[in-house]
Image (cartoon, rainbow, N blue to C red):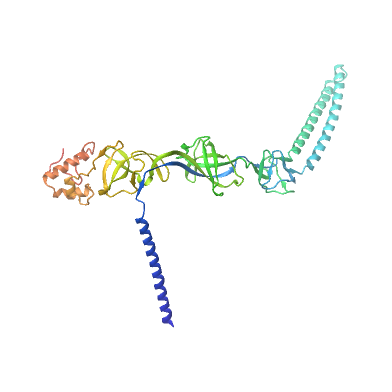
Length: 452
């Protein structure tokens, strides 16, 4: 029984190993077929090239208000709920105003009492003034009646102020919508006590409202791309949560100072959505496409067909493509313009219908070099110095310090003189001041003489 189990396990391992091998072999053959069938050339064509910079942002209302009462109280009326649309001037909520109405009634009675006292004090003051002018009462008695009259005036004014303050508080118990809005949140209910914004308290948030007809995106634009933006510039906005929805936007403002977000320095940019859709909700993520350059119906080629190389002799960077001519490829200098992620505009050097290589051809397949003006340059062959070729042990075409030290004992006197000339050219002019002409690994001139 034990042997049978072992045999079954061995067969299972062999089966799974064979299956895995065949699958890997099939995948390898598939990749090899794809490699052989890959596109290696491309025909020049005319097309439109549109290049844009993409940044992300979050949609938010242009106007959003946290509604808080200015006075303390208890919610007595709450006619709106989350997502309700409210017109400007409509009631959002009302506080219980019973205590304030009682207070106002009390203030009215205080004003009536103060007016009676003021009238009495005024009559006494006028009588005292007449008696004082006739010399029938002392100045002290006159001043006392005058003082009582002035105090009565102050008491009446204070009672009036208290009444006005209570009336103003009563007017603040009814909160109305400042603009056409939608209720975003409402964390309180009827009967809940709320605090006002007076004093040190920031007040209780009863609800949050926003104008959803005017939406914006606050985006962080990289400092490398912000120079391409301008006020009132039109952009395209894609809403990630709504498939195939693209809307227009316009740049409202760009921050004058850079900020750092997630380790990237950029500028806060406000973009207004122009044609909003009911399916767009604040908080959704959006992608903004900022057009940078556009070219219509231009000669274009794939980016892979354009090569660049530094020309050390002329101290400039050359841009070129390999154009197929008969059985070989000509190295054609080109001038390029606008590009996107796949294609590039060709300003000079190529024409529609030219066939260019997408990979660098082998050296034996590269023919002449053609300039932008159409002139043909012969293929340059690298000239190797016989002395360097003789003693260059690693085959890199130049001599390192180790190679110079190893080669010096093997050189003839003539070779040593040529080597010293090369070293003088390399290190002599503007080189080292003290012993600057010595070659690598050599502290004395050939022949043993010290250099002066």
